Structure formats: C-alpha cells, structure tokens
Length: 338
Image (tube, rainbow, N blue to C red; front, side, top):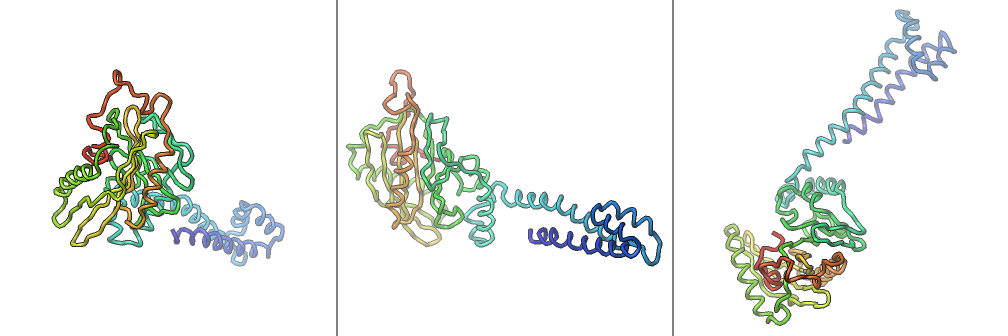
C-alpha cells in the first residue's frame, strides 16, 4: 500500500518534468507552439513529429518519457487498487481471525483484524428480528453486528457467533481483537413457548447443582489438561414476572495448560409467545461483574416483541410448547446458544 501511494505521487511529477523539458526545447523554435503545448497536450505530438530527427530541436526523448511515465501512472492507478482488494479478501476470508492466530503474531493479526472490522457493516437505532417478531432498540454507544457480518469476519472460528446467535451488541469503546474484549451475544431460542415454571421458587442450591451437572458433562469433552467447573451463582437467578425476564451470573473456574482462572458468564433471557431471546456475555473478568450484569439487563429492556407475540399472548391450544421450562434454560440443560 505504501508503494502504491509513492508511485501515485512520484510518477505524475516525473512525467511533468519530461513534458516541461520538451516544452522548453520547442519554445526555442516557436514560443507560440510551446504555449499551446502547455494548454493542449496533443499539440506535443504535432511538435514531436514536426521536429523529428532535428538534432537541435528533436523532442522525442522528453515527450516519449512523459508519455511512458504517465501511462505507467494510469496503469498503476487502475491495477493496484484491485490487487490490494484481492489481498484484503484473501487475508480476511472466512477463518481469517481466531485467538490462535493472534497468539501466533499478536501485532500483525490484530492490526489486520482491526482493518477487517472497520470494513464490517453494523447497525444502530432500531433493528428488526423477523424470526422472533421482535425489535431491538440498540443502546446508545453500542453497535449491532448481525450474524452475516460476524460469519464473514470470523468464518468457522470458535470465536465467532454461536449457532443460535442472531448478532452481537458491541460497545463502541471495545476492540473485538483485544484479548479482554467483551460483547453481548443475542440469541433467539425458537423452540416454542418456554414456561416460567417454578424458577421463582426453586432453591438456588438446587439450580446450582443442576448447572454443575451440565458443566461436568461439557468438561469431560474438553482436551486433556483442560477443564471447566461451575463454581457458584455470582448473581442468583431471579425472575421478573412483570417483564417475564430472568437474569443471573455464573462464575466458572477454567483450567487450560496448567493455568487456572475464574471468569463470569452473565445472562438475561426475555420470554415471548414462541420462544425466548437470550443475551449473554461470556468469560468476563470477575471484577467487572456489575458492568456485565447491567449490560445484559440493558439489552433485554431494549427488546420489544410485536403485538400479539409477547409471553402473555401464549395460547395453550394453538401454540407449540418447548420441551423444557425456564429453569432448564437457566441451568444449561438445553444447549443454549450452541
């Protein structure tokens, strides 16, 4: 890219020097013709032909030099941007970004990803979610990246959106290439009506035990030397029966390559007539719990279901019912967002 810019600046200058050289030589014979050459460049062809072979006034060398460098400038102008775009397409094709790539060459890969991200479309304002019959009013200072944009950016990398994700809400101050980045993944769980059930009366210890059982089975599938364990509910699951929304925060202990660290997963789920909208921030630093919880709550309050599509509009006679209740969703007994 730097070479392209230099050529764009240098070649016209060199061409101009050659051309002025020819104008000066022509001016020794005819000042009028020299002036016309300055105003109308095709006149230089007439001057070159007229004095062709004249030892003193021949301008073949300067004129051909001017034409050649100018033609080269046009060629670079036409071809270089296309070549640059091809390089960008290759660099940021699906699977271009992953944490493993960043670890291999942190500076270069994060810079490349930042460029790709800058060229990725996002939305603000009101965003329609047709599958859920819902609208998200994107909070101020947040950007909404839909699933298509994220898939193009991440490809098949595990750092990309989950299978049920419809998009991410990303704060404008967050760089997704940073190791400590965070985002709110918005997922639509369209399995049918999810009943609130007895979540409000379930003992926290019972919910925790169910969640730990699910985590144990997931941990068994990890590579040797890696494990994940649900430690506790940093925020006990609570149900707002007016908003039909549940919120909770889980603390996990991760072990990988002999290194252990605790992280938070923050969730809010808003129930609707035919499914549930799930908002999640995964692997947040434990000291940022308040930010984590507030963010998923904010996202859930900015979501509105269409008239006739809210939780209370459920018809037990006509609507499909999910095979699980809200407690199963909270504890991970279904594969939420996977």
